[in-house]
Length: 239
Image 1 (spheres, rainbow, N blue to C red):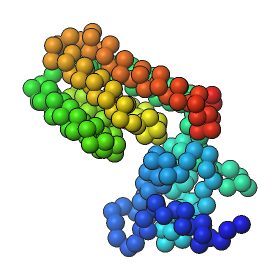
Image 2: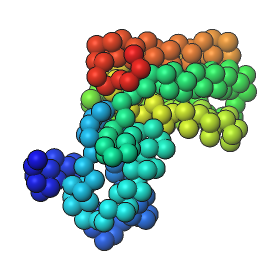
Image 3: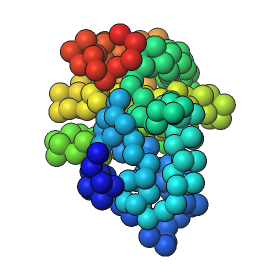
């Protein structure tokens, strides 16, 4: 077995916490590890060495264990009694459920907004599209991902239903790894075109076409994911 110092070097993508930073230690560790999992620095099925993480971050075992327990609650890690902790493989059944929720609520969101919305919505969406186009042209994967999230956030904020927004955001969190997994120049171009179609429907005030455009947008992600899963079965749990 390699010594902890050698293993810790494999966690070079984690920045030592230091003494400053916003939030409690456990919260910060949870955020770092979540981002590492979502960004595939920690791959699906990979064993997690808690001691090496402690040494890399300069913290005790307790906040690392607590952070991992929280991430288990999010479905991102598995804590196996007497066997250790590993990154969860992506569960297609959970992804389908989360997308089902998003499809139902976000399709109805744009249908409602096409019928009635305030004057700030379309300028905000058009600005978002310009930024998305620039990020896609620059092959800025992280930037495009953030702008993609913002686009949907603008729609939910315009709807103004706090409970709907909370449910959609909870469903979206379970899709973060999938969105990163499928990120590519091709996917960015398709997403941008789909977003442009949604905005065009809103501009036209066509509620039914807006609903269909959002459904097609979200369905395309699932179609692509199923194809990807068939080609990369080791990343998934329930093929």
